[in-house]
Amino acid sequence: MGYMIHKIHKSEYFMVGYGGSVHDYQDVTFPADIYDCRTCHIEGETAPADAANFKHHRALACGSCHSDSSDPAVIKSEMHDKYQPDYACSTCHAEQGQEGAGHHMTDAIAKDNAKNSYSASLVPGSVSIATDMISFDVEFKDSSLTTTVMSPDADARISLSNLYFGFGNDIDFGSGTQKIDLRSMTPTSVSNGVYRYTSATSLTPDESQAATGVVSTKMCVDRDSLMGVNCGTGTHESINPAVITGELVAFNLNGDTSVMAKRVVVSNDTCANCHDEKFIGKFGIGFKHSGSYSNFEGECQMCHNPTRSGADSKSIIDHIDFKVRIHAHHASKRSTQDPVTFPEHYGNCAVCHDKGQLKMDGLSAMVATPSTDSVLGAVEFSPIAATCVSCHGVKDSLVAHIRANGGAANDTRGSYVPGSESCATCHAEGKTNGVDAVHPTQY
Image (tube, rainbow, N blue to C red):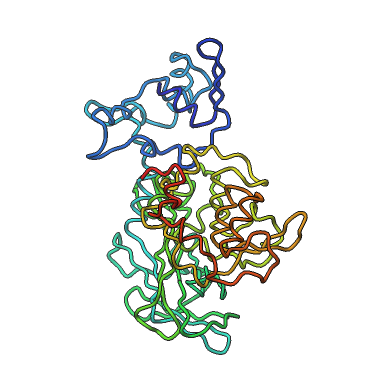
């Protein structure tokens, strides 16, 4: 079983079963770090009774990744020849009463420790714009240090530290966005762990408009110390860094203490159920942008929004607008991607959405998503309509239904009036014909 399951998740398993039935798993897409046993093997109080047995492994389980053979004797011989010159026997073979395969988890544990100790957040009342310059404060914390945490330009453990601004929380940052590389800037110290930055900007938002700031960080970590380490100096440094997801901080230029946050329609926790929050595994995974953007609740939308420059040249199914992109991607509807082997029915909204996130509220100011139809040319889709067609496609019956209820679908650009969609009347979560009712949703 261990051999088969590992091979399936590595997309390397093909078998002819009972009655000549063919089972081909060579196209499986695994969305997390396959090197971290804990991705599948649950630990803790909720774990099955014998869950820890995976730490005391057999040759076949090891060989499923480390060898091309399925013969235990050959696997043992190959692994001894490969690893004995450089590693102690205890690296693979557990001492009495100790765990085996523990080295498989050191990479993930080191990254977990970095994520749990380090944070970087925008100070909300600190942002101002004047004469084409934007000024702001960022607070850095690190519970693993006994000294004041340094700014990213001086902290040799940090390989990436970017602050992303998005203006217009109610319109998916349609009033402008900006990325600022904090490692390339020398700030002034304001107080313990708080640093002030000033950068050029072309943003001209209204001072009362709700906006969001988020800092994404990558930190080099070491598998021996299980902590952050100055990049390039670790005794057993991880090939890829820890990805530290930043907090979404709502603010406006007036410095108001109560600012409307961007609506949350998908949670980082639900994404982590499949993607395990590491974004870059020990040997890398095919995760878009390699973890440079990791807060799915709002950071991704700073680029993946309806008004992103140049995005309107694609068909609606291939648009980068987040609500379209994510649905179409997981449903394998996009024309420009390799197939995704989504492990659930893609119509099960509960895989990604928590209860309460499908009420379709907070859309009164949202603009349409512009796209290009192969026949009609420049068209647009209203917000809810764009989400629906990302899975269901641009069908005549669906287009007619959308238009009859105030929405736009394949309509002339500029025809949609924000807030005129009435889809939520029947299809909001909890309604008789709510999306949670008409789809195979299983909370």
